Image (cartoon, rainbow, N blue to C red; front, top):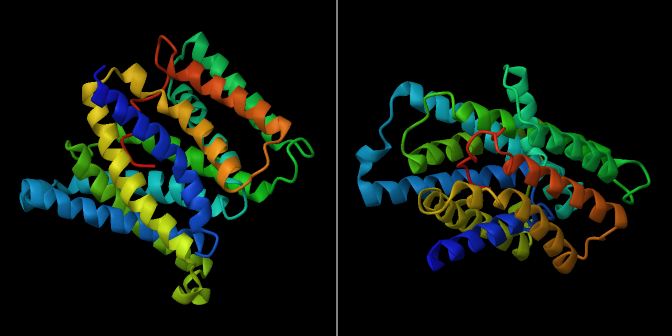
Length: 302
């Protein structure tokens, strides 16, 4: 690979890994689902404006079926997956959340088994390791105090994320990845807003109560997480081997755990390290399996 490709991959490693830290800081003083809604709505609007400027307004025209498909994928990936990550991080450390998110490929394999697919032995080993890692991370008394409701929310989020990833390869989303993602972001933002209203978040929200570092974290998530790193990722899918690009799936959790410990002083318990190592090994087994058991890596931003 070229030096530019390695630099782009480093951006994906670090920035996407750091989004968990950004979410944790944002939800310190912002309602979780409202902050998720702001992130994706703003990012989607910016991406649409950029596309219209670079390619003309006609680039955003898509067939009704493609628009509906993009909206469905956006609701599953961003409102379901990422939105619930915001909600979970109001209760869980950022590093633990990242490790739970890393279990998404396990769900993808199980979904494909349910549809008749027969994965290879390495992929099944990855599923087994993922289950073991989850048990080690969440067993009572093994990793300190764990908010089990937050864990359940995040596990449901990973299931919705996996379902959206699988569906995105099977339904007629827009051909242009940037256009598809712009519509997915807006749909996901609207979905997060509706969920926030159902939870009653707007009623108790006051802009003056939001800290400067939470605003900075939200801006970081929009500009660097949803736009900058995503652009690098889409470019890498064309400029680098897929096997190399896919390594972000098990590097991001490591980055998240390290940053959580260094910046937020989140405890690195023995079982967090052990469970995290097992989960990273599980993801590596799945990603590098000779017969790929997952769909093409999702093109949506973290």
